[in-house]
Length: 122
Image (cartoon, rainbow, N blue to C red; front, side, top):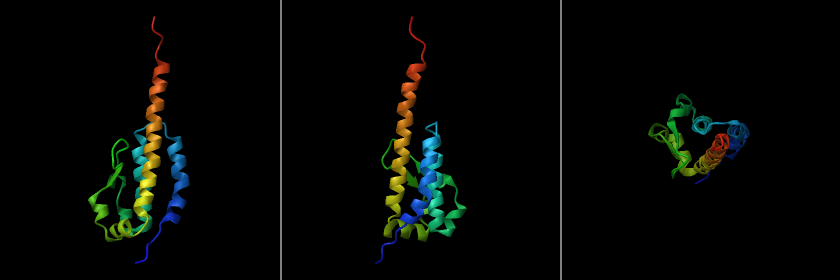
């Protein structure tokens, strides 16, 4: 059996994905960015995936696994096959890891920023 690779698609999408992640200021925006990139990736693999929206991909930055593809996506033959017989799962895992790291960075940074915004105790 031949193992298919989607690294070329990942490379094509990853530069703008990283830029979006780096520019985001609120942690809750990360789920939308992650879901959008995964939906775009899946659309490149399966024409049928283009009809789905970002709600088909869920992101849980503080849990394991960090994401979940809805059953409607997983049940698509092209996607199911790609998840089992290619590097697609690894690519999505990497995208999720980047999103999780950015999320955690924002959460930790926000905590520090709030501390400095507090008025001094008198």
